[in-house]
Image 1 (cartoon, rainbow, N blue to C red):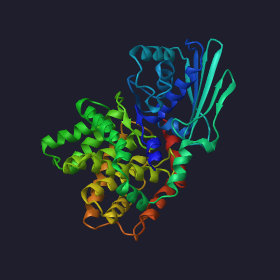
Image 2: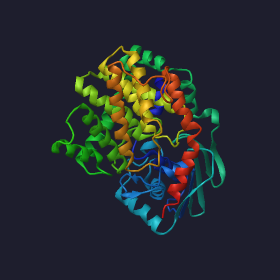
Image 3: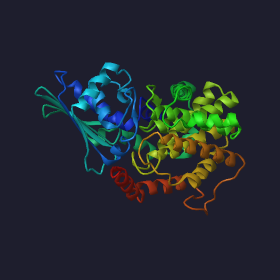
Image 4: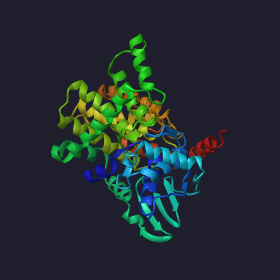
Length: 422
């Protein structure tokens, strides 16, 4: 499970769907013998298009996949994974925008059953390179140079498959016991999630990004329309990080399951509670590992990109982490908090990555804390209500079955609506 955490909890600068395309572009550019890029052709799955249409690409001031693929080719770091754009310069952005103005960049939808798929082909003075990514944001499955295969990965080699297979063998109880018994030295790396996402939160409060939801909430505290209580602090600090990330801040988020918002949702509520009780690093690390591992566990049960807002399921991990901090040893409360969230947040749709994602993150963080408060008072949504069952595993499976099956049509309808906008 430590290996899974290290593979699934990674720094990412910018929304991970445009960043995945930028990464493919940077890797393709690395294979070109000359730097004079003439043309870039990109194809993406419908879901990747959905999540890349409305989000700001860091340090560019522009929205969408064309600028992501262009700047990735010009200045992306092919060895940096989801941090591919962290070192781009102003000159790189200028050159990328020139390619767009010259109509040298195309991004189109490729009909595919794969929720997460992208490919990039770059042409440069008789030279060409093509890179394909599938299933996971940095999972390169094919590299071609001048139409000759130089690398090809089989499905059995996929890191994401390894993570899913491990998650199939565990349960919430197994994860909880793992967190309670593991040596601190083996998990202290997870504290980097608190460091990065808290820095992003502070950036979101220091500057204006996206819809500035955190600023608005904070303003209402000063007006007396919101209380300056723990719930409000959780909403503001968590939302601020998402505001900054979706608004194009050039700081990395610590992601979870390939999503910065999921990483933020799994991290910041736990950090706020840890600050409130003055938890030491050992205690915080265990709560963060519980949160992030449960978020990975739940997300492994439905497609990497779907119609279900995964910030809501990541927040179920945060609920578990908050319970751990507030009432260590109360495993029953962890179960109850997760079931409460399944009863509350079922069906929040993902309508593409955009500034409004911060609203969903805020809603999910609020639900997580309300669910924790209920659980600490020994109150839960019962197994007689809706899709919630007496067993937490069954409740999670029911939610994920919706995302994996019936919500596929919802997803197709969302994409159709977005694509038909004028």
